[in-house]
Length: 352
Ligand SMILES: Cc1cc2nc3c(=O)[nH]c(=O)nc-3n(C[C@H](O)[C@H](O)[C@H](O)COP(=O)(O)OP(=O)(O)OC[C@H]3O[C@@H](n4cnc5c(N)ncnc54)[C@H](O)[C@@H]3O)c2cc1C
Image 1 (spheres, rainbow, N blue to C red):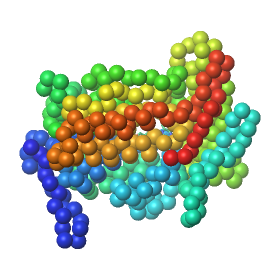
Image 2: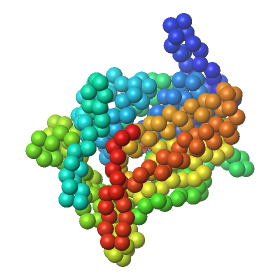
Image 3: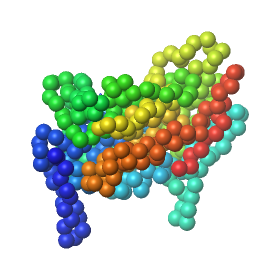
């Protein structure tokens, strides 16, 4: 077995084994080195699990999704990247400007005795670089680029993944953190439940601030969805346009863009596997909680993996605990209400 216990040193730090005891069997195989995968890897290493990560891209890429809810700050600290994140100097903001139904208002995140809560506008390439470095520093074995080709099964239990180069990566548990691609969920034929009309997002970046003096993201209603623009600092902005398929349009899918229809893969755990981040539950970007949810689910998936491997819980109970925390996340209040004639913002909560 590849499970190697962590040892506590006299100053309280964890000294972690960097090599698996059985090099043919990892404790945890993690597919995808995005926020969910890196959070899982860092957390698992803290528990002394041996970790191999398979990431399809050869290096961190620029992707959309920069607006991060303030609730993410304690997670960064917990993952040991708080200092690197503050050194990165990401633009901070205190809430979101919303223009909807001819109404315009500013929705603050909230505040406490130390002042307003501040979210981040984090360049995702920089964020990925920080998280991947933290996972590797913690002792995760990262293979990139690596392309999963097929699951390795023994009956109905997943034992690992074979990659396109013919190598088999065996593990006691495999976490699918491949984002909306949900590679493992698809490869295992896990059902995808839809909970929204068909939603498509297009996105891009531009070299100007959203509006004069606007330091906060702005969400503006459109007849078939919404437009989002967010300052990144240094006179750059990111934008996203979401289009929903309306019954009167007579089509089932808006054309172009990325499919961000709300969906959940169920069952999101099973013998030998856990789905985390967008691979488990994908909601459209309006709530700006995707990265937050990815980090939380990555951390929790590694916690339950460790609990089952160190004998605190049997695997079935550990995976059930994960599902009972994850599945209610799909009941997030929909920011887009649906009627015969139009889409409307029924609720947009920026609260955690
Ligand atoms: C247009 C748009 C705007 C968004 N805006 C926001 C926002 O403002 N705030 C916010 O919090 N969220 C936003 N989101 C959502 C957010 O980006 C995701 O929820 C978040 O990135 C999910 O993290 P993850 O780790 O699950 O997946 P990802 O970030 O998608 O990471 C998945 C990783 O897996 C890798 N991978 C993919 N396939 C494979 C494979 N077969 N094998 C190995 N590796 C693979 C990918 O290269 C990637 O590194 C937005 C999403 C979109 C589409």
